[in-house]
Image: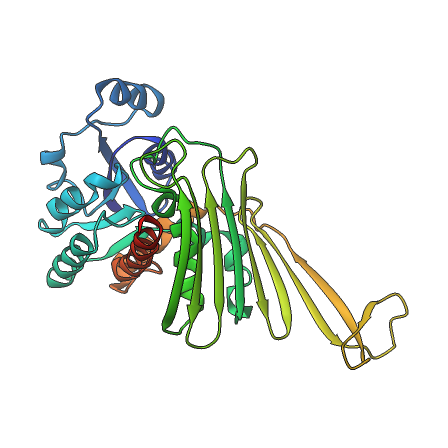
Length: 318
């Protein structure tokens, strides 16, 4: 097992602490948070050690940074310079320059750097990612106004999840970005929509809001042979395929295409495998360290998602 500590014991930090307490891969040696009342709450609830941040580096092999985004860079630099492997919750940093500096330190010290884009480990995506060859992607990520995460815009808080997934699926150069959004309660956009066009013809239309009465985390992928729906809340997905009808199944759902040819509609429901996405992230972080290989969401991939998110924000704000 590898020794690990959690930096930041807020909403996400507590999830990490809870899961690491029973991890088969990491030995949780303690945590740090500057909020004294929160420290007492976590100690009372989980019976773990509070450790001053300047003493953690000598005790661990790795850290998980789940502070507000504005503190990601300074905390990551501290540990990377001490040759500690680093997992950072998304977004990787506040700026591209900061992300590039972290990547440079990570490479120079031959370390593992992972970014917490947790939807990559959601069973809705894991179960069907190899079947995806999208030509059009539509996503809706809606939530009520949060008590956390408002230090960044809805693009960096919510939409960046879908940006990361789209970039993992579409291996093509971006040719055009259109975006709009508006500030309602925050000093940065609370509602945003972006249309991303790729050189290979694929188009992604992403919508995010943190002022919705109804929570939704869905993505729809359209491709030449099928339509695929992913529900990240339930962890399930659905594949709808249209094939030539052979007449064997008289109960089959059929339609006629524009040329009058009868087609059969086939629906396959892929259920939630009941996996914990954060546990899967921890496992990937562990094996990346042990095998000295890039994690699924490396610093570089986190930087690329941040870069596109910032470009979208600039278009909205201009």
